[in-house]
Length: 345
Length: 172
Image (spheres, each protein chain N blue to C red):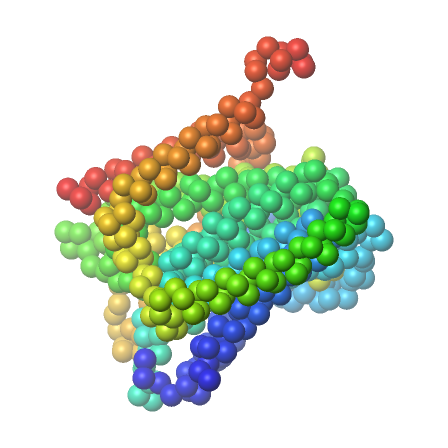
């Protein structure tokens, strides 16, 4: 890129701010969506009082979090007790930086890619940052100096390390097919159609099993039902965030939903063709449609997350570990070998 | 001084500072966290040199997996603060000058007598393709032998850690 340095910095800062604002708004409304959808699934209304359809509920919740008393229990190990929620949130928000939302747009002669930064190892970077996210949860559990928190933290770290392997292996199939770690290249490789009407997405291109391994492992990585053992209420009060209140609790909450959105982004980019979709109409509409398709696909993922939460019960802990190591991991390896043979053929 | 060089020196400072803090801290979990900082800063150094794949693997494997297990064990054993004993005082008195002499000697030998050139920033051939070429083509046999070695180590660990069945039956 032949941009002058200061313009590059300026553009990067503007993009970062926009993406951060959009991401945090999306996080707030994912919470609203979850309450609403789970409510309807359970024959309730969900939030209705604040604004039309309860749409202003996230703002009310945010204000409530801000004004709640920020308790620090006396027996905690203070430096890490304060650092843990920040670590969880920072790692959750950082991983969005390499995700491309669409093709480049041209403003005033400048070609600006719709992505904070495109790096050759984009996918590895996301995996690296999300693998660091476990420290927030583990250290929160340990520093709270509470047996329920500690058990939650231990469960979370064991679970995330175990499922990370299956998660990583499920993505290797896609990488073999596209031959690049760059998320932009991976999406570009999925343009076009089979027989003129089936989109050339990786899920229709032999990675069907890979996608399901990724989906299951990702649910475990984000500690969502049916894998939410780190915060199982019936056994552990609230797990690793039992001792947290006010904004510190909100940081864990935001980190969880930001991670869900990142998982949706990665699944969309790797298996569902990213921003590819039918383009039509006015040139301006054609420029905006890719971003719309990308957002729509992520919305489907978030809806699926909530749907699963409203449907499935929680695993038992030994079932969780046995499933991860004895079923998911061998299946991921088999998928990898099969893909490698098919590509080499 | 270029921007990259400043970044390189900053990461280097974090590395050394983290390593010193690792030794200075009394609580195992603080030491483990400093080690994570060292690993992450090392990944930054690799990235700046151009070895992007190695940098990513450094974060995923060392900072994200191995150190999680370290922290896990510390949490599980609930290790407390370490106490200063006579032995640890002797180790400080003898170890610090010894280590300083050793590192100065190593730096001197490497800089003056190794005959290798310093790698300019960003010039290391470290893209995934380069690494794959080295691992799966040029050094295929050593790579496979190492993986078998690690497999044997894993199996040894499993054998040592698993209880004999009779003893497990009695414990119940």
